[in-house]
Every structure is written in C-alpha cells, then in structure tokens.
Image (tube, rainbow, N blue to C red; front, side, top):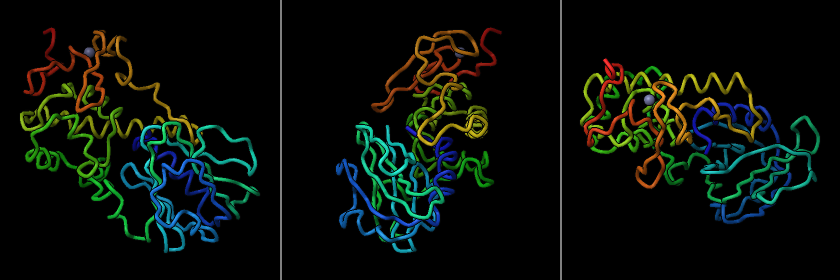
Amino acid sequence: MPERPDLEHQVPILARRLIGTTITGVRVRKPVVLRAPLGLEVLVGRTVRDVRRMGHFVVVTFDGEWDMVVHLMLAGRFSFARAGQKDSGDLAVVWGLLGGGEGDEELRYRDDVQMGKVYLVPAGDLASVPGLLPVGIDVLGPAFTRERLGELVKKRREQVKVFLKDKNTIDSFGSAYADETLWEAGLHPKATTSTLSREQLDRLHAAMVKVLREAREEIARRDPPLDEKVRDFLAVRNRGGEPCPRCGAKIRSAGVHGHDAFFCPVCQPDLGGKGALDWRSIGK
Ligand SMILES: [Zn+2]
C-alpha cells in the first residue's frame, strides 16, 4: 500500500495537476469503494482548491464546501489520462477535469482489490472519516523528540510493530516502513513497547526518523510515475529467505496482528517480548 514516503511524492503531483481544475463529470465503476451518501455528482462544476496528505489519507477540498478523502489502502492508485483513453479492468472512479492545462483530462482511481475508500464529507467534517483523526505526531517534524517518543511509549503495552503502525499516534508507518524501521533499530517486531530499554528507544527514535527521511529522499530522486511505488531499496520488507544486508542471515516473516512482519532473526532476536539485544554486540 502507499505509505507516507509514497504519498509525499504523489500528493504534490496531484496538487500540481488538480488545484484550479473544475470537475466536469464523475463515472463510478466500482461503487463498493464509495462512502458518499449524496454521490460524487455534487462535485460536478466545483473547483479543486487544495490537495493535502493527512496520515495515510489524501484530502481534496472543493470550493471550501466539500472534502473528498481517499484512503488508498492496499492497492488503490491514481493516474491521469486523456478523456476516452482505454480503461483497465481495475478502474473504480473517474473524474473529468477542466482547466488542467492539458485539454480533456481525467483523474482515474484504480483499485484491483477494491479495499480503498473514497469519502465525501462537508468541508472540515474530517472527524466523520473513520481512522483519520487525530493525525499522529509528525516523525519528521521538530516536535518528535526522543523525549516525546518516551512519553508515547510509556503508556503502551503492545508489540512494537503495532505501536509503530498506530497512525493516530504516529504520522505514519504502514507495514513496509515499520519493518524497515525495526530492522534498522535491531528490534524484534513482537518486542513489547513497555519493556524497551532507554538505549533501545534511542535506537528506535533514530531509526524512525532515518528510515522515513531516507525513503522520502530516495523516492524523490527516482521520481516514479504517480501510479507506481518504488520499494526495491528496502532491506527486509518482502524479502523472506534472502540474506540480511547487515549480517547475511536469512530474513524471516512472522504474523503480527494478522499482518506479515519481515525481520532478521539475528539482528532482531525474539527475547520473549523483552525487546532485543544490541546487534552491535553480536559476535563480540
Ligand atoms: Zn541480520
């Protein structure tokens, strides 16, 4: 699924192409993705004034009257196309655009598993979108200090990967960048947050910032198209059976709350919920 580094690349592209354009029509091919009691037709004739990321959601504001909120989930993706250009079978919603500077253009939302959601709410009524508010602390902002992480963790007794993925606390990690962060920090994904030592929390804080910042920079450098995500630079995610880039052990996967977690059993040993060893001491 698109995660924060992907959206940090995609949302500015959407903003550049959409702000100032007016919706000329809407076609809904897969109504299952819609959470819009009045339908999306109320957007026809309205102009896009703002596009922004909030956590894992994309928020598009129309004339200060409507907020369209899209949660791309597992497989949702946006693309732009010429009006009438051939559709693909996973097409879910199409918005006709006027004034985009490139003639008759369409914004297309594709979703081959149809788990994504397109909400339409009165502008500012973001509290009615499940899971959106509150947006957690910005890991790359000045407020996310080591002390702040300590305060957040103190109240929590859960697996550290579950904590990382709580988007109402932290903005924001999905499965891929949570796995990368825990590998970077040398922490087992099932380690319990409340048992982490001061030194382990130092490493976790540093890894959270480093992984998100480096991913943002790498994706900016690669500049993929709107509907592609670049993941080939990740160390452990979806690399089960491959050698750990740090120690060469085979990367494994385990279930954490119904989702896969990929980790290195040597760099991130399972200590029965008691955090992890300092990997730098391994082999000494
Ligand atoms: Zn390793």
